[in-house]
Length: 120
Image 1 (cartoon, one colour):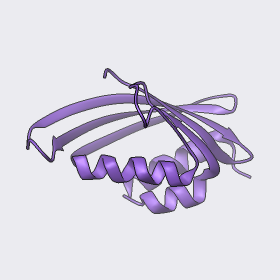
Image 2: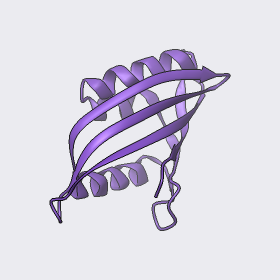
Image 3: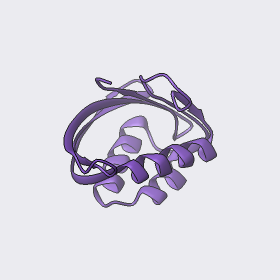
Image 4: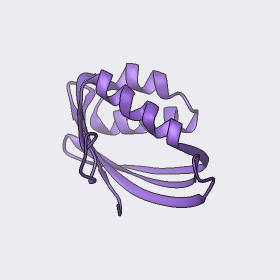
């Protein structure tokens, strides 16, 4: 079973390799909870089906032109990653930059919660 630091290190590696399907299959609990700071239907997504729907929406709305991931910084059963993204809104074509931090909680070697922090 991987420690939180090992989970975080592997997560960064898979993100940098663009292996998003693998990271969900390998590192996420089926009961994952994903929490966003913005109110609405996707503020709290529970389970892989909800995560997949949220991801489909994100990729339909945004094109990633650049991504820098830093971390992990572990603390007990949690770790933090930071993301610096250059994005383009697909509908308007407007480029923008987004920075966020994410707090991940690990139980039994799997990510059971991800909580994102960014200015909304």
